[in-house]
Image 1 (cartoon, rainbow, N blue to C red):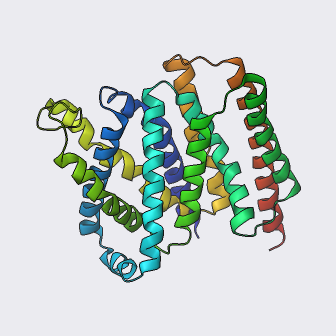
Image 2: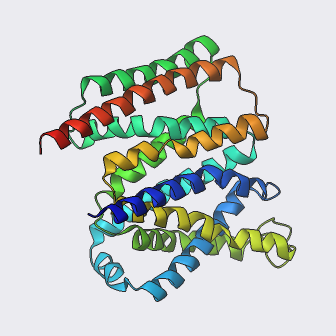
Length: 298
């Protein structure tokens, strides 16, 4: 792959993770709408946006192939449930002043992915990876024992997105078609809610102001665009390189939470974050060393 494509992949990766990092600013604008109702619009407008994109760019053949494979459809049903749960928890965390917990969840996610690879994909952990995972687990354990609190939001986000990514690997479908099918699977639930929606619901577009309705419709772009950038990056640069950019999102969230939204960075959070950050430094060093060794052996 030429240098120009490599640079394009890096720019797309930075764009994807930056958009995910700044996404809380969008959801804060919808704080008067409940998390469940925002999720409803996120599903509907993502489906509409992806349908329009499919009509423009093509790719219906991929959809037809998956529709002929019940096993893949069953897996997509599970992934759609997982990603809906992840979206709901994230929106709730942002709009209830738990953005630091959301940030911690996405810091934990790559370490949790390593554990999933070991358990389900028979991948062997290198010594530094074991050390990184151990430090992360110790950080969470100290919070549980010393401070008597479990970072439920953080663990929920890491687990739901980790399992989602693991199962999506089993479905041989591109990100664009996959998101379209996942939102299509969720559409009956969303439409059923619309049919019985109370007239005073925050998601009721018939009674809302036009500016709020435009914000709700923008959920499709906010959801789909970073995913498409990520998919574009993934085919242009190695996953080991892509992994170096995954900390952009939670770092932006962390900065927004502490600096802009004045969320308290308590002692218990500082201890847990400290262990996670140390684990991620070790994890990143191990990735860099492993990539350098692979390149030297070619």
